[in-house]
Length: 122
Image (cartoon, rainbow, N blue to C red; front, side, top):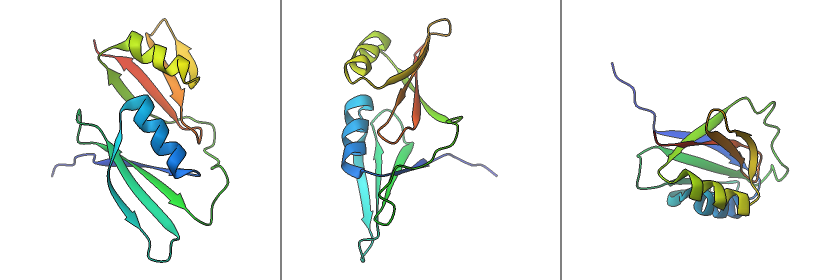
């Protein structure tokens, strides 16, 4: 029996702000969308050409407030082929929330507070 990870879900309070963030910060673009007939939810899958893995962004009409994501003890990680340029972009976006120079990594935070780890290709 084999398993393959295909997506991770994040619930978001402002779908357009999240789509804009993920495209600018990580190059993730919408690949498909599902909208409820009654307008109660929109699910958008984003990814880039570097991997098959997708991030599922779910917006719920009846949950307009920010999500309580607890103690932020989870994250997605992204390799980058140009760590310095990525770091500069994320500094300009003012979304870096934690840096660990000794490990050579840093984290950015999306509009809802989800942490994303940035790792140089080694």
